[in-house]
Image (cartoon, rainbow, N blue to C red; front, side):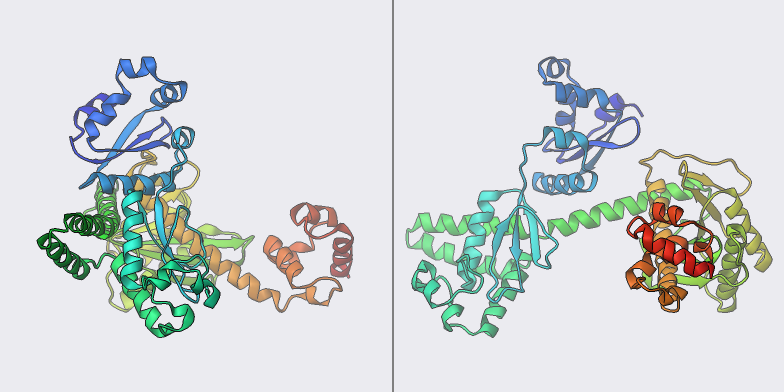
Length: 482
């Protein structure tokens, strides 16, 4: 389907649109109240004639369009923010206005935690809620929550009597004043936990209370106060309803369903590949050879079923034989324990690794277990007896296979490093003056073993481990030769 057809089929509903370049790379992410009208604007001649060079460059680079429908413009804003962070599209960077949405931050490590509005999320162990696209509503609502629960509003996270003497909130009893002991630390923690519960979307109780107050003020003729309560209730509903959970679930569900369905079609599988087991080998010149197996159930990692293998039969760099050994051991185990066989076995590699896996399966069982290989070089998919398949780089099926393959590789590398680090403790390098633990780690991670290290000159080693000076490397090489 070409771009013109895709634009004609766009819905008149809120959502997020994605533009891709010819390479498949995401170059722009935008949101719209009406997807069809918004995307059409990019391709009108009148828009192109009066647009700035950046806009024209974007339009000329568009090769494909994708979209996600959402239930509201608010959800579209949130999804747009998430996708921009995920893809960092070049034209969003070029055309941005540096606007970032507010988040609510609560740092429970503080003695007296409070609600703070921030624009950047840091890896500091604090709780973050958001982002929230409507800044004014968020400010008013955060202020209301702080007053409602009597939370600290001053800037000092550990205020004392001097802060209290200059605090309007404390003197007007808008804050419960834990700084001077009016409220115990335990009671304050209860208050902050109730606020967190509210921020997680549990707003029904407080909404009832606010509506009751709104009704009372309206009956008294205090319409301005009643309107204020009405606005707060609306803000609570729009800001803290768990729309983000909906978005995450919506995207995961759609991506997983699309990926598995397309994978079944591409690989010509009789069943939906709900259980996929993937294997990878890790070794350096045959030393410390290990293998990993990761499991994906319904398109998601099933970490409790991950497994690690030490290669038993090979000490030479023969990845094919290693793969055959591991697959054979795995299938034997499943059959002996009378457990269900996977719907698909994925191998990190091309035709050679695939043939080794097939050979192992045929040794053990006559049952057909689908096997596929994914080669890194061109992300080519190999099936037994067939030519390689190359999918579009933004194909859901390919993305799923890449995620599984990369997870198997990560798991194998982690195990291999763990074994190498254990070997360090008994290394002959311990006997060399000036070689501490950090230098041992650098050398053995790079060369895997002392035996391999002996093959190189100090100058060659220095090129690969420049952190160690050449004088010490000459001492190491002389020591190993003796």
